[in-house]
Amino acid sequence: MREALKIADSLDLDLVEISPKADPPVCKVTDYAKFLYHQKKKQKEIKAKTVKVVVKEIRFGPQTDEHDFNFKLRHAEKFLNEGAKVKAFVFFKGRSILFKEQGEILLLRFATALEEVGKVEQLPKLEGKRMTMFISPKKK
Image (tube, rainbow, N blue to C red; front, side, top):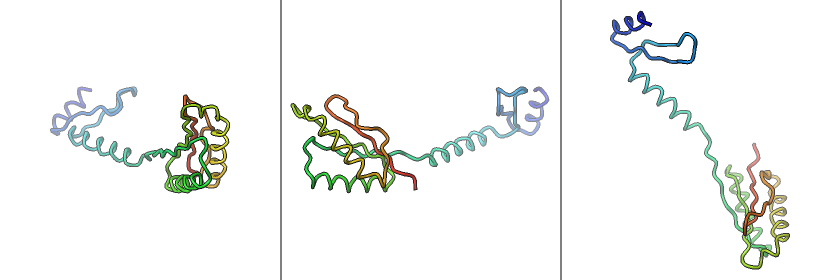
């Protein structure tokens, strides 16, 4: 260790510990500021390469008619083709909670219509006054 410090000092550089958990610890003679700069640059590249998941929401009522259903279906297809996840939900107001079955049937019909472009990630689930379902895009 002392020899490495002497070498680094003679070259006007720093002794940077790369892997402290290794036995013996791995060190490198380098300029510390430059080392930090390269580390930040690597982190930035990794962050840029990660895929950001976008979730688009589509809201239905328990008695959504055919035209509205088809309109929202086209939007969901577009979202899935763009690579976004779709969160479809039926919102029950007041006494409409009595039509839970209608909401579930509507969401399942929605899922079967989108089978070609997406797959169901979570089946319809009732949470309070809304029944939600997640659909993720299929890999191409």
